[in-house]
Length: 413
Image 1 (tube, rainbow, N blue to C red):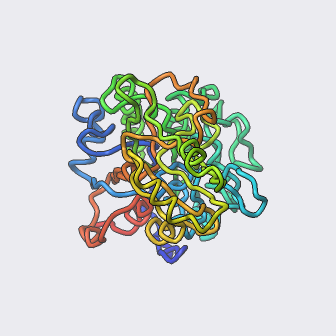
Image 2: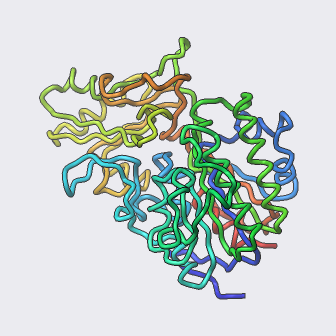
Image 3: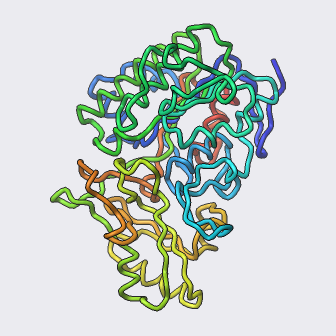
């Protein structure tokens, strides 16, 4: 057995068998959660077995409860103040422009993958959304790394794999579909079937279904039934399989089905017209059909720093607001990188969403009632591991999704 691998002040044992860590995007947990409802209704017999014979816990994700933030927390074992990824979209003080946080230059900490590859491990990293591929694959030189979204572009130089569509036997999947997530599972199975020696594998799905469908709905159950079938196949190779999520998901619509949105920029423009407040909706990404850039977390830049506390108190009093924090409070309470957030950070309650100005959001592509995430009410996440862990893991004060590699590798019985 090789020596443990140390990275970001954590140590990870060498996997005793192929270990697959899966981020099931947007999988809200609990008695009314996606997996639990699917199990209850008979759609996930394999996961039901894992709960009874393996390890199951409910933990927390990093804030904000977004995809990029938490995938990078998971794969570095750290929080945003360490790895630097605190949004999908942010105001970059270096060039004074609002931009997507997809480039790997924004990542400030090495990944667990990079450390294991340097130690000689064979890895495969497969993500549904291409926006994550560059971040997850930073500094990888030998490991398989590609996205389902652009699987046709995978090549030996950039991805260490080619002819992925031929291997999987499926076309490039539609981005706004369950097929995008299914593709990564099908690819994982085919890679293992052809005899690739893999020590660690990471699979990250997309939350299109969770944005559109509630737990227990027919479409959601069909999606999780599909996942259950692939989990059974992965276990049949003798792998250890561990699951978590990047964030939860909550309904954010009024009784008539329209989005229940607090448009903060409009309110601030009306009541503080001279103070030039700039609201940044940090959930913004290229996948507008998912959420219309409406989430539960925004950051605000103020020209008039003397009014930070006054405006903070004004926002806190708005119906539907959960917490309004100064930059310093957000750094201390939410582990945010100080140089990448505004003067204020605001989250809303579970049934609300936060927007910029009403005119700034094109909601014409939202065909279903809004479901979204980003706030404290969407931080609960599931933790499943196919093996029964040593009970010593229970000494941890709390479990987070970014503990998943630690749990999967360091607590064998």
